[in-house]
Image 1 (cartoon, rainbow, N blue to C red):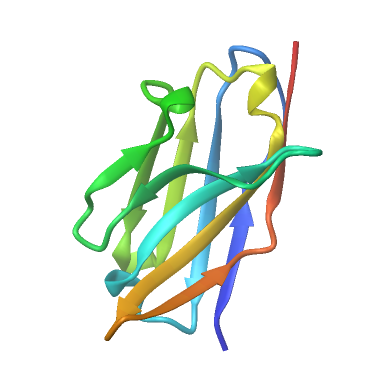
Image 2 (tube, rainbow, N blue to C red; image 1 turned 180 degrees about the horizontal axis):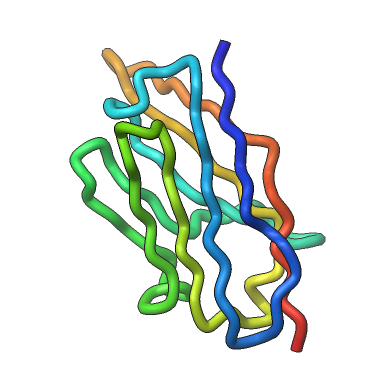
Length: 119
């Protein structure tokens, strides 16, 4: 059974930092792309950052230069370092593991962690 467990969310003032972690089990972590997504109240879930199995990264324009995604395959964990946080970063943050095999998409989601940035 696959589990993705996020941690590290919380309440922080604007300009502050948080580091999110997502630990996985039940998958061969190193061969999956890992992503961080977020969903604010009344809005659709959006991609924040993604890191491939080869450690290539991409970011939403809104977080470029402020957020950094990284992975530790030995710990089956993906991280999101968030600096210079803004109130508009307030959302539930989810991690996702995904992999395409023979045209079939396999993806798994965590339960989410709340990030609240006060002004």
